[in-house]
Every structure is written in structure tokens, then in C-alpha cells.
Amino acid sequence: MNEQLLEKYARIAVKVGVNLQKGQPLIVNAPIGASDFVRAITKVAYECGASIVRAEYHDDLQTKLRYTHSDESYLEYFPDWRAKYMENFAADGAAVISVLAPNPDLMADVEPSKLSKANKATAKAIQPYREIVNKGGVSWLGIAVPSPEWAKKVYPELSEEDGINALWENILKITRADQDDPIKAWEDHVTILQGKVDYLNDLNIDHLIFEAPGTDLKVKLPKGYVWEGGGSVNTKNDAYFVPNIPTEEVFTMPHRLGVDGTLASTMPLSYNGVLIDEFSFTFESGKIVDFTAKQGYETLKGLLETDEGSMYLGEVALVPVTSPIYQSKKVFFNTLYDENATCHFAIGRAYPSTIEDGIHKSIAQLKEAGANFSVVHVDFMVGGDSLDVKAVTEDGRTVELMKDGDWV
Ligand code: ZN
Ligand code: ZN
Image 1 (cartoon, rainbow, N blue to C red):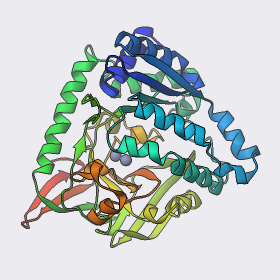
Image 2 (cartoon, helix red, strand yellow; image 1 turned 30 degrees about the horizontal axis):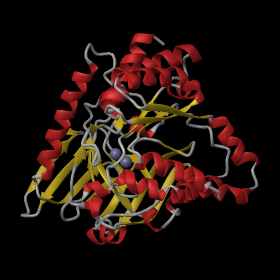
Image 3 (cartoon, rainbow, N blue to C red; image 1 turned 120 degrees about the vertical axis):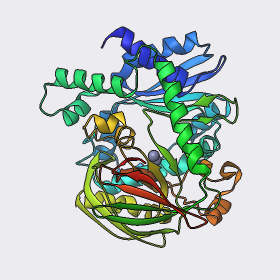
């Protein structure tokens, strides 16, 4: 990997992604294979005045050994000291970059019930940390680098080396890192997303209508809905950060109890290393009352049965087919990329920031206002060039938002 390009990519992570401020600590979560990129991030971060950069390395294969060899009862053990560590660095104002090197099929042969057990325990243990994040007090970022397994999945026809190179090329293009001035390109992009957000927030939408093959869905928005896109302002240090690189979406929350009709996926979903494909849902008053899946049915079932809220939706997002990810005509088998290819929904938790004053509301108040709550938040894709989206406003007007997958 070309060192200059890697540094440009690292600059996007530090300056656009978490927008690191002078004197701020930085935590970098990364797989062991991403050490070159972590070093590039570290260099840029210290140049930007980081007080300390701490790399937290993990190894997916070592994680997998726990599922295959540990006594099952211990899978629910999440050490308190680990949760406290996260709470403490968040309270200390640290920024957090999570580098992903996806391995889409890693957990395919692990029992889904084991994964959901451990995930549930993790989600519960780190809830206090999540609260700080949800209240906007942590500048965080998810950004990806190729892994050999990911490259093989996206480019099965290429050799490992060619696949990794091809994936890098795509990543750098999609994230604008290959442009002369990536920081300026991101400023322009975020401004466009903000324009959509402002338009939708002023529209007084009562509900949205999604129509596509297999999809006929009415999605009520709660009173005081807030669309977001691009990034948001850290409530502690007032710095604007962009938590997903890439990001092409504008999103809000559906009313927990206001979703009715059918909804069909248009892309596979990689969940816990298992692929779920060609799935669909039937909703009644917000609840999933029926579902199908050609592949990964048991995993989908496990996900939906996580808790009460995992039977409801927490996010609705609009992404035009002009997105560079959709244009790449590739399925990336990874949510960070695929969710920014096309329109999507999320099963589970709603972002409190997507309803008026939500970050100051308790869970009970959020639920009362129509927000869904769950320990999971899993995006799945429903968009494509045959999707139409309309908004029906509170005063009864119908406004076409998307036609054939693109903004009207
Ligand atoms: Zn989304
Ligand atoms: Zn989401």
C-alpha cells in the first residue's frame, strides 16, 4: 500500500472522522493486521496535538477460539474492568477510532445462539459507555481497511494480492482519499448531505411510503423527528465529527409502533460473520409479525429474538443510487459499505439524536415519544433502482422524495 495514500486516508480518519482536537486522547481499536494504518493514524494524530494515542489491538481468530473452546456459560461474562475502562476514557473526552478489517464468513460455523449470548452480555455491560456515546459526548469513527478474507469475498475471481489491491482502490475512491484535497472534498460532501437534512426536517412529514418489488411499506415518523446526515457536533468539545467513513445516508427514526406492510431486502446482510440473504418482513403496528430468509434464517431468527425491541425498527435511511458505493456495483458484505450503497432500515435501537431533545430524554421518555429501544442495531438494505419513496406531510400533501432510487 502506497504510503502517501495511506497517510491521506489516515488524515481523513483523524481530521474529518473524529476531528481530533489539541490535547485530546485517542483510542484506536484495530485488528492486528491493520498496524500500518494504525501507525499512520498515530502519526497524524500526534501532529494534530493528541495528548496520547492508545492502540487497542484484537485478533478475530483469537476471538473465535472463545466461541469454539470456552465453556458456554462463560460467554455471558463481560469483565467489569473492561466496561469501566471504556466508561473512563469516554468520560475523559477521548476520541475513538475503530478500524475494521471485515472477515464476513468468520463465524459462519459458530452456533448463532452462542454469538447472540455473548453479544447480549457485551451490549448490556457497555450500556453506561453507550449512554455517553448516545448523548453525543464521544467523537467516534468506524473506518475500514481490506483483509485477505474480505478481499476474497468481494473479488472471488482475483488472486489474494490482486483482490486486496482492487479493494484498496475501491475504498480510497469511495472515501475520496484519492482526490487532490480529500478534506475539502469531504467538506463539500457533508454540505450536500446537510442540505437534504434541512429540507426533510422542514417538510413536516407524517409518514413515508416505500414501494419496490416485494415492498409496500408505510412508515410513520414520530412527532419531533430529526433527520441527520454527515456528522454531528460533539456535545462536550463542540467539534463536528463524522462517525462513518464512508457516509452517504440521511436518516431518522420511524415511529416504533407506526410501521405497516411488507419490506424486502435487496442486498445480503452479514451479521456476526453469518450471511443472511433474500429476506423479507411483514409489519403490523411496528412489530415484525412474519419473516422469511432464503439464507441465514436461524441467524435472522436469533437476531429478532434478542429482546423485545429487536422485533421493531429503529432507523430509516435514504441513500441515492448515485452513491459511489452503489455505483461501484459491488456488494461489500459489510454494513459500513453496503448501508451507504442504498436506502436501508435498522432493526433495533433508534438513535436518541434523531428525535427532538432525544439525547436528554430517559429511555422511558424516548419510548413514549415513539423511539425504539434494544441492545441491537442492525442495518439492512432495501434500496435500488426500482425503489420509490414518497412523503405524506401532516397537512396531507404527497411529496415525491425518490424515484427509481434517486432523489427527485
Ligand atoms: Zn444508516
Ligand atoms: Zn444504522
